[in-house]
Image 1 (cartoon, helix red, strand yellow):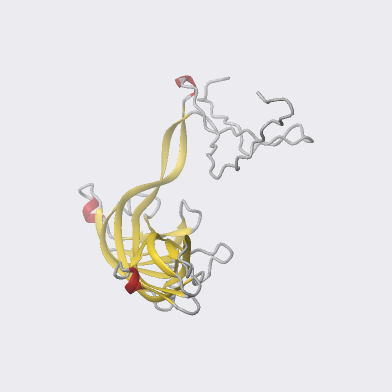
Image 2: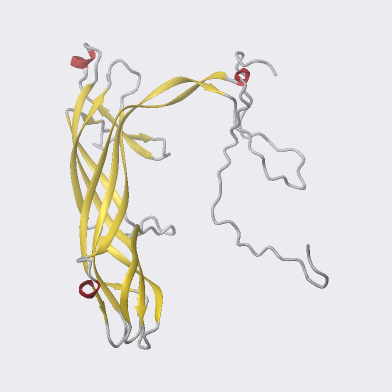
Length: 303
């Protein structure tokens, strides 16, 4: 309740920084609305997961901003690292990327007349799957898969962003907290950091199927960083005249890679129907077209 001559309080809260997703899928709990639907998808026949790590030491990495003459660092509050990505140029050589290159033993990548591997579209919407072939007759006779072996070289290139939260004291001995940042190079594309590992996967029959199996692999990179010797005095240098900061670092590259053998299949799944999203209403149009056709399967119960 506001006092006389006192204006009501205004809501000065900041807009939300995060959000929740809306899929359009609902279920009222009644099994009467559940029907069987056929879908044509890719099945994972076999998969293997690998965790790899590499180290990169960097000496005298410049950080910004400069701290000013006579400034010294008292303590480090936090030091963190994340990969660099330029959304305006996917081919930026500074983008941190992991390029897996695989050689198979006991199987072959299917190629065209020009010797180029045949690639097909994967669930990510890109040509990310290689068609493979192996003689699976021996294991087909006993109803089992055929083992294949491979060697993988992961070439890592690009940069990472390193940020340091530090408490500094200026020439007047006034303390304040600053964040130093640097775009630190890991390796150029011409001389990447290479990690190697070996794997085994199980291949289904290539004869008892209309489609040859496919091989796909994908990786993700994270990074962790620390001072080279965990000492402020040894690892951080501040120019006494300009205040420019250079730091000695050790960066650990943490890589997770997964390899899969996938085959096209048709599955019967239980469904509660198509998603229905609440659209933003336009003040002009009264009706709008559908995005997907109505279900006309005769097995669906009438409305």
